[in-house]
Length: 168
Image 1 (cartoon, rainbow, N blue to C red):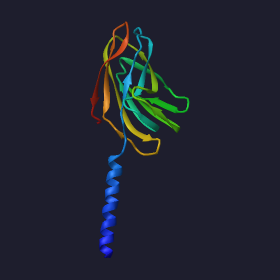
Image 2 (cartoon, rainbow, N blue to C red; image 1 turned 120 degrees about the horizontal axis):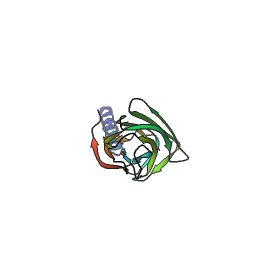
Image 3 (cartoon, one colour; image 1 turned 90 degrees about the vertical axis):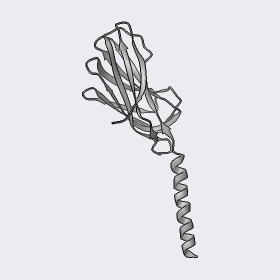
Image 4 (cartoon, helix red, strand yellow; image 1 turned 60 degrees about the vertical axis):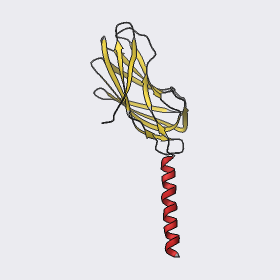
């Protein structure tokens, strides 16, 4: 009888873990730029949520062609959150923290990165979400990174193509 109860308890434990793991939320992030700007000028690239998500913290990496762009600064889009962005050799590491969590709708900007365009032509920016934590302090499943092709043609800076790119 004892073995039956032990086996039943073990099965219930495994089943509850499976149901919990299946209910885990996911988060996906991309880049957006809606600014028309002349070459050799400042512009902002927004890190945007691709789905509705409630974030307590997240870590992002944005890589770019440093021959075409110069990173200037990162800013937070919500007054109840903090952003720390550091740049090294064409890669910006971003830490986002919100003590009370922030609810983002799809296409809402999580933070903004200021760049300066250095030359005309076509280039890229990649974004990866390294880690994201929800309001309930659960780790979120993060999607593959996204790559944006950016056309700097002397008249404007715009994202012309975005595609998923596997994490490396």
